[in-house]
Length: 261
Image 1 (cartoon, rainbow, N blue to C red):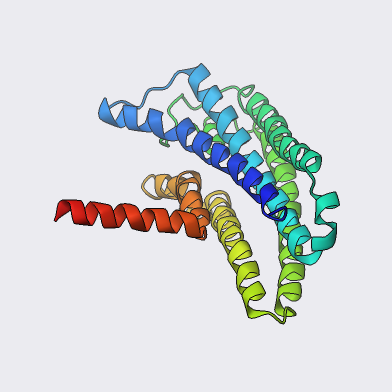
Image 2: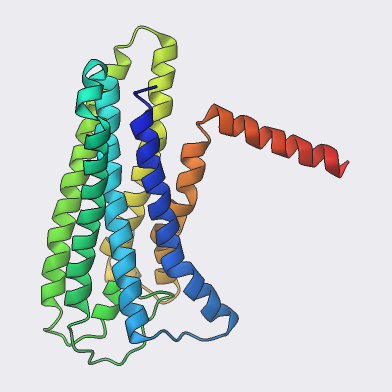
């Protein structure tokens, strides 16, 4: 039980971040689609950028923390209580939220201090930093580009930490003599690995795709891939490994089927 309690605490934080990131972009996009408009205020655009960067950055930091949590639970189970106690969990979660807040403040302040020389029409369904930079003067956006490069390097560091954690985890798992223990370890780790892979691959494709394949029709699809798909799939990926939840879903479906008949 003690090996699972921190994981559920981190999953609660992940669920809040997913809910927040979808709520930041989709409601305004759906309202604009219903009213056939693309308008958003300058303050609303700044708030959208701030919240989106905060929540996405904090989620990536939290996924890194969760990799450490799984490493400690599987590779150092006897020391788990001292490595990932309740105080350590709170501190790591606070660090994830705090790093997201700091990243959001820096990016938002830098982006919205730039003069817009190319009009004020963002070619996207939400306020996205790369599309705002396209509207700025040619030499004024270099500060934000430098800041993005620093954030990218930190992100690569987190990704390498996650990869190393899982290399150590799988080495430990493959040495397990008990088949049941092997199954439990994989069922705990694979959902997290799937979420990390989905988040990282979609963000990398969105921000590192060559300009030659960028187009008004492709960019919104790519934006949906990294801003909507991972937060929407995370609850499904994590919840489907929970036996009680699967039993509850099965009962609901069976009840609906019998009631319909």
